[in-house]
Length: 63
Ligand SMILES: [Zn+2]
Image (cartoon, rainbow, N blue to C red; front, side, top):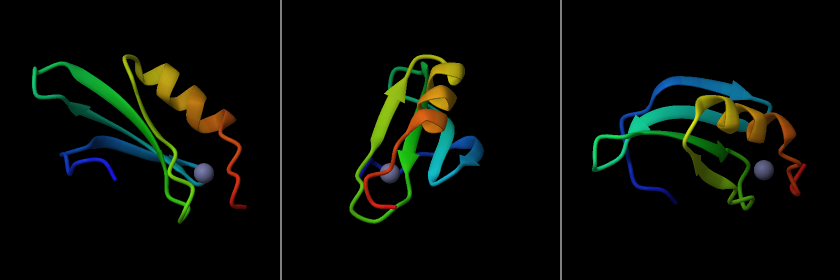
């Protein structure tokens, strides 16, 4: 589980949610996180396009 943050521009791509938030140093981070139970996929990226690409190409092991 990632820490609770204020995500903005949240979109859903398949089972994966992509949101933008600032880390504790004020930099933008783009997180792709799968909503499927027991999947656990959650990764931060420096760019929005990288996060959305990861969401699009995520192969969920659960479904
Ligand atoms: Zn998944």
